[in-house]
Length: 249
Image (cartoon, rainbow, N blue to C red; front, side):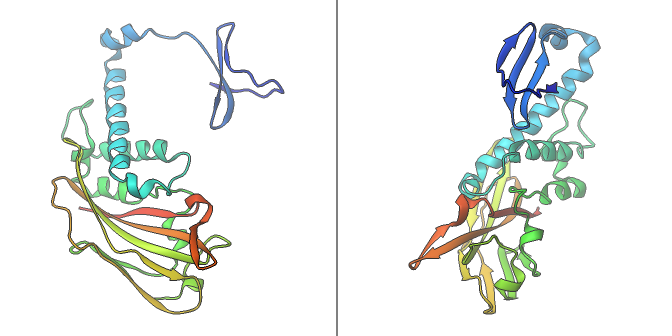
């Protein structure tokens, strides 16, 4: 694959070359290569088939997690979130040290500390990472699902976007079984505070925790707003909102 540098922006196929527009600009690739049938059947390509199966599983696992969090993700994501999540799921899958090659999976990977560590570091919006936005210490009680901050001073402890007058905190606990795609989510109360010098305590806790089987994800969401005539409007359609996995059990 090559990048097209020209005043002419071509899309389509010409002389065996395919021109198309991607996220990185206008790209070009040549046609040809090994046939699909040979890759699927030739013993020489068994490693390729195994890699393809595991990549497909990683992509599907990422899709399952995204769909389980649809309500939270509607205003929290960047343009490369899907591909980043697939790559992260692949790292989780690689921690499956039990299954045979081609059958390694996310469910087993998440039973390991390294597998959990890979996924709990994931920020769904790479343009607004939690560690860069929230500059205060916080606690997340995995027994109750409570997210809390003591003595938060918003205009000192929050690195928010220009124009924001308020922000809100929301905790979430998700149970997701990747094998059956069974999912259940519980949301805490929304805590909305003005971005000023007033010290506040933040406590967001679900009324009850989900009981479905599977891995348990603990997440926090931070949203920014601009108040106009006593009405708070989402700032820039959520371009600076935060959603991060804090812990996995």
